[in-house]
Length: 495
Image: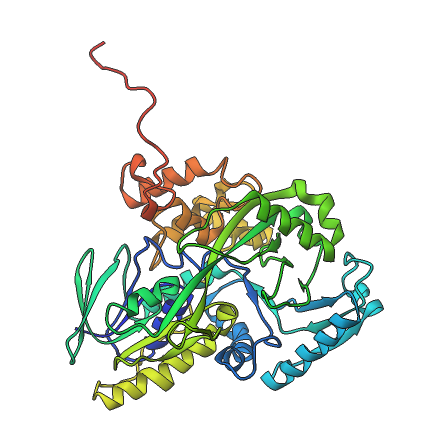
């Protein structure tokens, strides 16, 4: 019997699991994918929003600015790359300047610190590659960029290290409310849990309908992106947003935490799980991004990857009105908690949301239901440091190689990722089990050649370290995307 079962090991589920591990609860973190953070948390803008555009009368406004402030400490504890580079919302005319003043006032209501309205000269002094007709901007110094997939991995790792049990490749197929507990049925096993947290991302409405009458629906929207080579990663130094519209925040141009450049996303209705890219939409992203940063047009040849991710827009009140806010509450089914409709600024808000879910929802339920609450005296908020070989000094590299020669073998030349780093990611808690899993944890394959040179070596290392045949190593285990089908030549020893 688990005290708490969390369905979904994306950023929401993994962070809530980590918060729960502060207490001596028996916690199950369950996900249908073969790795944590393999859906919405894997493919998004990676922006930590300051909080000026989140409606002050909604949960988004309540949690955004607070979550942003918490990010520095969280990423330091978890050893996650984070850069508080600031953001600019740019204006091309007087009408858009008025919109910036509205955002500024809303930001003040949300408690966003340090905002400034900048005018043309100040904006171009800050970002010299902006379009000449940009006449002003709203500057928010607290905004930043993070590595979302590394964040989820480190959250799950820390949760497991503090006692949470992780169950992957486990799809919940049915839930029965037994009054004293919930019986969760899956493709692998059954779970009994006193409290259930539904953090199933785009599928959260489907999960809730297993146990209660539907009262919200999630509509999927797809956003497509481009990643540029690090050679042009310094075209902008801050996150550049257009003036927002009814459709959303618009096509942004941003540095990434690892030194690349990102543009996107668009926002189009789609089917759940659809992460395909389409040429027309990708072309539109290029055109739109170049309106704010024209020099991008000269660098389209330096794009190294495009990709898409899904997000969800919640609809509530018998499916008739779009609420557009997070759904964070104990549901009409008691002891069943929904953390749903978790679109932007969900990534930013998650530190504050998880604190709220634990202290304002889970602990009160425990007191009401007489579930024992004891603090975990061994809780450690910090992860074991990951060695980023390329960031070390020459002397540090030499000392490390003396200790472990595998750190002297560079596997991914584009990102300078060593065999020692790859082995470390495999053997950690919630470690990598596929080529994609390695890629998410230490960036082997995320460079200019996108794994063209290093993938065969990563396959060899996974085969050896996991003690499985090479033809069982996959790019993404859940999708059974096996890389090798067999030997190209078999020699008969009798010939």
